Image (cartoon, rainbow, N blue to C red; front, top):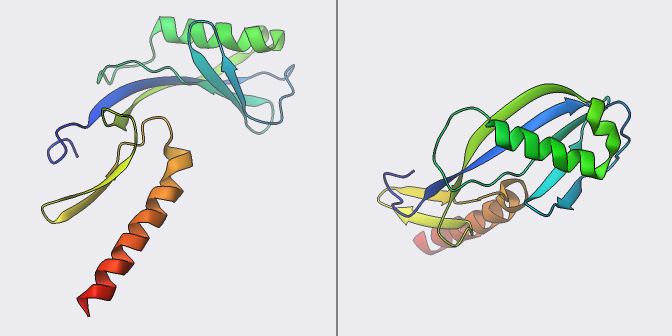
Length: 144
């Protein structure tokens, strides 16, 4: 959507998935680490997703060594069982973000853009979808 939304930017995020059978977390944990905040999300069969790096960069490359070390260090700080975890997957991607890091619904030409979720897509997507549905219902109600 960058062609239509000039102020949209990419914020790089990196994550890893590990198998840590010695760890027994049952809920997502947000860790306010001294260097950066991260989260650990339990999945099935002793697997955990560890993520939350935020780098002001639109670089699409692989996970950096620094991010992998910091995420693993933060996980180990939470539970020493992560020291023996098997790394199953490393991933990096870009999060679409506006300057204020708040999602927006924007109308440009013949398109409606629902974008800019930053790191809150899974939380904000339902709210944005509801807001868009309300807008569309009002628009079509006045079209009659």
